[in-house]
Each structure stands twice: as C-alpha cells, then as structure tokens.
Amino acid sequence: MLLRFVGKYQPPTAVAIYYHHVLDEDREAIKRQLDHLVRWTTPLPAHSSQPLQPGLRYSIVTADDGWKSFADNAIPELQARNIPVALFAISDRLGQSINGIAFDRLITRAELQALKYEMLTVGSHTASHPNLPMLNEAQAFYELRQSHDKLTDILREDIKLFSFPYGAYNQRLISMCREAGYERVFTCMAEFAKPGAYLTGRVRVDPTDWPLEFHLKLMGAYRWVPAAIALKRLILSVIRGSARVSKHSPQVPAS
Image (cartoon, rainbow, N blue to C red; front, side, top):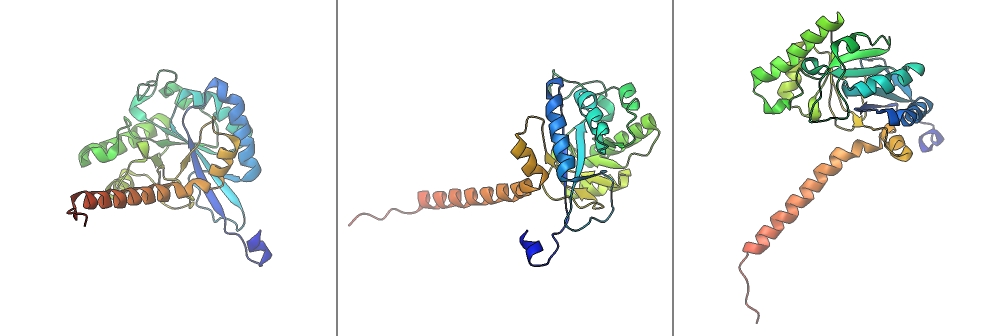
C-alpha cells in the first residue's frame, strides 16, 4: 500500500510450495488451502519461465516422493481448480515406501501412468531417495540419470524437472543435474521463486498447517528462515567461543 501511495509498483512475487502426504482425513483441509491459494495467488506450472506482472503474487505447487495419498486426495482437488502441479517421483521405489513410513506408500508404475491430469508434470526425485551429497560422484550421477531415463521410459516423455531429496545439494550436484538432462531443479530453501531460474527454493506446507501459517508461507514470509538459522548459528558460535576464552583465561587473584 505504501508503494502504491508513492506511485511505485509493487514487484511481483512467486512462492514455490511442496507437499508430501495428504491423507483421507486431510481432504477438507487441502480444499481450504487450495481455495485460499487461488484467491490470493496466480498458480504457475513448475517449468514456467514467463515474465511476472508487477504487483501480482504467484505460486508454484509441487509434491515430493509421489505418495499415494497425495495422488488420491490432492490431485483431484488441484484438477478441480485448474492448479498446475509438479509431482517428483522416486523411480526405483514405485509402489514401496521410504523412511520406515507405514501409513502411506508411493504410487506404483501403473498408478503413475494412470495420472491423466493435463496440468500435472512429473519430475524426478532420484532413483532411490538418498542424501546425494553423501554419495561419491559416480553414485550420485547414477541416481540422477537412472531416474531420468526410467521415468522417461515409463511416461514416454522427457523428464525435465528434478528435486533434491531432503533439500541436500551442492554446486557440483547442480552441474550434474544439467549433465543428466534436467532443465530446472528444486530444493527446500524457503525463498521467492524466480520462474526460469535453474535452481528454485521452496517452502514446505502440510494440510495440518494453521490457516495463518499457510497464508504466511504462501506470501513468502518464511523466506527469512534460512537467514535466521544462519544468524542463530553465528551467534551461538560467538557465545561458545567467548565461553571457551573465558574458561581458559588466567584468573586474577582478588586484591
């Protein structure tokens, strides 16, 4: 409002969000969240590179892992509202589960092929969902390329999007993603998205988020979190360093 008052346009903003599970009991909650999303933002596909209009807010909806609950409960609601979505699948774990989760499973190959929503884009989430920086270069590239090629074979379309498991990446992995054939990659750093940028941060949302919490995430209020964490670590390191210096300083006898 202040920018408009002084005759300046508010710059456009875009926030990419990502879901995991949307259980049966979350169906009403996801409806409310998606209604809120289309009321406050203009949804964009994850591969969009179109220029953003000043003063408008945009959103990008994505989902990691490819959980059956998300396919069953979220995709129909996204389709009912014409909201584009990118689903990042784990190519070699289709139909299985990960991280010891027993209340949900990943969609099968057949279920993935049966997803016929025209505004759905399937991307890669590696072959087996490892923490990529913990692997050697050959293992990491296999995870990237194997998933790309297998999903391309399953869907008969080139897989162009990728998201890092656990949001873990480094600059070498970004280069390897390019080599593996991905045109855009996503992580979990909360920040404003720049459509067309190769690396895009996202903020996690869940159906259980409070309405205000979801709204603040959608508006980009959580983009300060990485900076706040870094500042906290810096303050703690200074405090601990001061404590160590104090502990080992010679004691001056009282006069």
